[in-house]
Length: 91
Image (cartoon, rainbow, N blue to C red; front, side):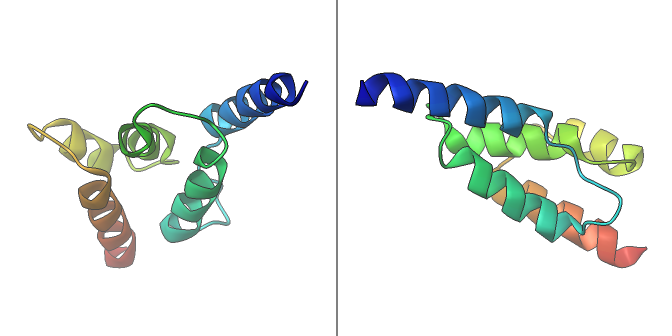
C-alpha cells in the first residue's frame, strides 16, 4: 500500500513539475527553487537533465535567451541557471 501511494505521489509530482512555467511575478531564481522542490518527489532517473530541460522550456518570455541556450553544444543545469539569472539581471 505504501509503494502504491509513493507511485501516485510521484506521478502527481511529475505532473506538477511538467506543468510549471515561470510566472510573471517570479524571478528566475524563484522559478528554479520551485522546480528543484517539485523534482524531489518525481523519481526522475536524471534529475539534473530534467531540471535543465524544463528550466529552458519553462522560461516565460525570453526567446533570445532560450535560442542562445539551444545553440550550445551541451548544457548543464548549472550553466542554464547562471545564464538565465544573469540575463534577467541585465534587463
